[in-house]
Image (cartoon, rainbow, N blue to C red):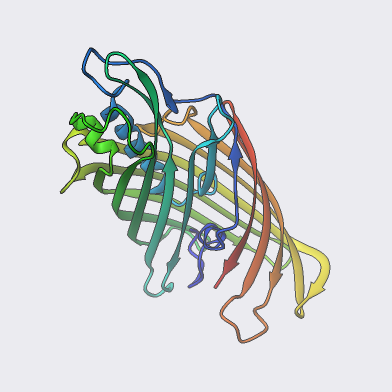
Length: 328
């Protein structure tokens, strides 16, 4: 997401490779919903509340972010992933003479809540699968403060959809017409979002090393619309402050007629608004190390390729990611 003279961002390219996987074991947060409603009700717990949580989770996918681009959160009771997401995208500035900045991301997430249903005499777990697809675009403009420091305001827009799939087949609950259950049975939640970001982008490139740093504040409002099931209409606010840094320097090795570089990376994201605490944490930190091949000597579209290993951690969560990144 740094303004790279017409090349994709490291973060975007890493996600495009679709290989990183971060496993974050933690205590269960809204994964299993026990309890029951009054007589005649079919779903224990508030479906709208959990659907709002999914909309809040969608806020994690609206901003390109190393810490959450590929994320899996385990259910503390079962040890299986109750939530997972993958994000890919990119951003670039056209040129210094026309510094229009453009970015875009696509994201998929899966949330597997479990409800308890009852007809007054029997109770049964109702596992569901909620699949979320979202896309965000952004247009910005670079205001150069110094030769190496850029201030970049960005306008963002988002579209997303949550689809619910009730996985239990024929049960005693099929005959009930409760609106909450209707959403669980192939219901959907459509959402749009609008807002913006403010970014400071620092690039300090020398022959023996390169430093990139990016500080970004984002505020995007999400709201349901259209054919969204009546039981789960709602809204959420994506508010995030993130800092990403990278150091690259030659290893002394050579390949493809260019130096092989080692890469050190650090990132920190803090979540506000509806994003805060929805997965059990308010911030995440990522520390990464990797190697980079430079193919710019050859007439191919890919100029650099990086292999990265990252350790991600936050309150009650931790994990490791593996991935590739490419610059164009």
